[in-house]
Image 1 (cartoon, helix red, strand yellow):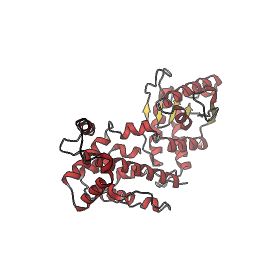
Image 2: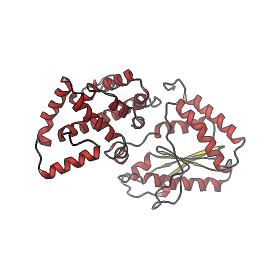
Image 3: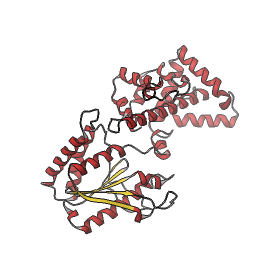
Image 4: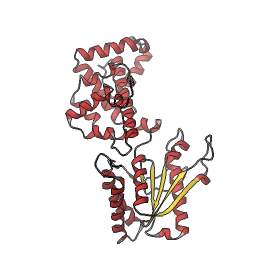
Length: 352
């Protein structure tokens, strides 16, 4: 299957194997292999429509394990070993044990459900000549603690087109951030970089760029939700409103209803973007990220893609009808300015 860039996974795998063979001609140490392989992997992932954002040798949770994984690509952890070291069974076992420890530590970043995160993750060990994969297979659906004996070693396999294809397919699937509450809050919550920028931009657009359609959307929202949020506030509620303004970086001139409307608009759009991302991946796992398309779209294409989401087009084309609620949260399109555009097209857009 070719992705939208025109490259098949097999073709990209062949190029990665060829590059690795060239690296192995001069690589003497684990570090030589890691630097060379990661450098070769970056353009191969881009050929598959993936924007790499690896983390290198980050300290893992020391309450779980003292050590640092060599490279973390989303939910995939790579452990590099000295060139050709997997010729010895002892070296394979050592690398396997290290990979297991790193997977457990990474999974515990998800405090809500580390075991569920662990089940989605994949460990990879590579010495340039061979490669193995490590998955967690829990002993039961109700398991509450990690069982180290439940990690399954697949390999080592010769690093050829077939094993490289397996690696690339898993990188394509697991490079994205997990859709867990902790990760979403970290990237898109009020203490993230993107949320205050976008919410304040929406508030600015609502106050300074209003037209009749925007006013209609806002008034309809107040009619439906005003009874929930209330029109007047006690002294304590006003303190809470000021705290919310500070959290999102908006001024005191923004009313509480205007702020809530902007926050509601932001999170409604975020949910639509996540849904669009999942729908596109369901159709073609090798397609590039929908949010990544937004990030790199020209101005007119950028607005067109957002309008298509708000009109339900991307869902209707897949036979999903009546997916969206009322359209009173699409007013940002009628009050579009450079500020919201810069926020939507920022680096975080591609991580949905």
